[in-house]
Length: 377
Ligand code: FNR
Image (cartoon, rainbow, N blue to C red; front, top):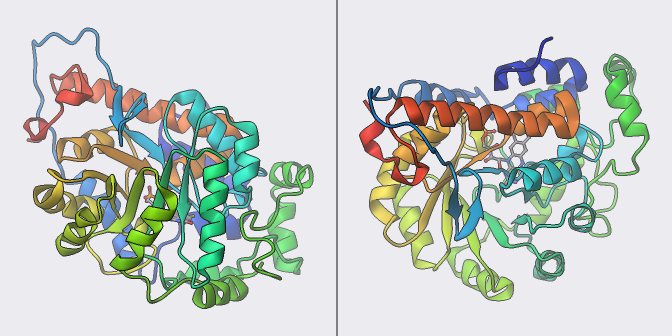
């Protein structure tokens, strides 16, 4: 293939490079995948206003997210098992993001650990927290993130119980992969992936080793999540987490106006309007369709970010126009990583930046900070 020009190109490349069970893990949504599909489709339905004969020189996409400078309002979303899309995936993605000047968010369920990522980066990254019943374990994770000088804690609120993704069950997902004939075949047909994976020792969940013996296959991951993740987590606990952390806090997984109001009351620095990329409550509305209502309700009190279905720079611009101060991409950077490692993550970011820049100019704007609902047709 010639140089990938779109996120869809990277997706096709990743599908050819990454063993099926891991490609499918990234590419799946819960149950019928209707929310996953709506996340993308609803962006396509938003039309932009074409403006002409306005000065288009000296454009800038630079802005801030939670007061931290970003070269464009796009962060890498926390994604579990990223080190299975490509060996050492979290370390590569974090380096690509820091070189690009955008935040990288490390998942609790990552393959590379907090310390691994800190060892290859020079700028602070963000850490995403799942809250376990064992608060000692939670405190340990928070303290490790502090020691690694993470500059924001992203508290995920929409996964106290794991949504079911049919593809993962059918594929018998596991990390490291089980050596059944089916999985050996999947890997044997992806030699580049195998070669890279053989060079690293990071093949299981780096942040939780020691807390979770034998964690590998989907039943054990699901059991772990269902036993460990706290189903009683409440708004009161957010205050405790905020206090223990003491730094910038972002609450992720808000899709409802009432929940957004609760989140704003916690004094969090930002919320992420998100349905976990359609991986949790199938049948929930798309993130972008909920964004304007949530912005109306709370944007005067808390920064509002959004993720889910962003596949181009145009989508980022639409989200910013509808009131998002920042956006996150999950699958787009995973496809890049699977396709070409660190260069693929950079490529995904370049594609999005270029699309954003051209679109902004054609909508008659020169500064991302001036983009508002006036660019929506
Ligand atoms: C995720 N997401 C996620 N979120 C989170 O808070 N912690 C996690 O560990 C994960 N893991 C994860 C794995 C994979 C493979 C995907 C695709 C997603 C959700 C993620 O942060 C984000 O909300 C969505 O990915 C955004 O949607 P798009 O950009 O993938 O459409």
